[in-house]
Length: 267
Ligand code: NI
Image (cartoon, rainbow, N blue to C red; front, side, top):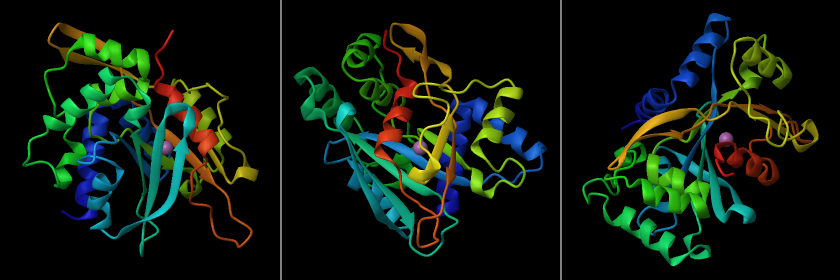
């Protein structure tokens, strides 16, 4: 599988479950813009069979390397970001994992159960990256219990392996060349932005500004019945040059922490 096949499969899965992202993508295209993807993000548990390093192998095989490491203390997450070694036009890949030892034995057991139920034939293949909640037989009570401890764990239990979000790279847009213009364009077209922590996360001084839509709800089948669950969002990133002139390619922990909250569904 080459990089474009992998990213196409991930995009198809993402827009199937988040059709609003495709609507927005099409609005940009109708407006005469070419949409370039800045990065995609994955979530996983810290189980050694499926942790950050295991998911990263598939990107490393396609020429990616680690370029940044992050810890999100408040969410008990660890993350790495990867960039393509020779082709800067390839999207960056951001992979985070939940530090399950910081949670209850119940959550730890459920995370292990999920990993246990992944078919051996899928582990170690790139298809795992878009296999969804491959552990199947979703239980709404488990979802609610996980949600009480960690929005991230609950989301992962329900949606599994998929791109959590894609990101429009504003620097490559011709007319909508600032994050303010992008946000205005989205609102004029009837889309709702996530305003937790402000519409724009980050500043030009921090070299990265990001905004995102509110997560959309999708029907999910549990064995107790079908429930509407918050799924994922579409993100927009504007990057600024560093003192050496090259564009900053990293992620800001402080601001990414706020973006993690956009699928927060607590009281
Ligand atoms: Ni992101």
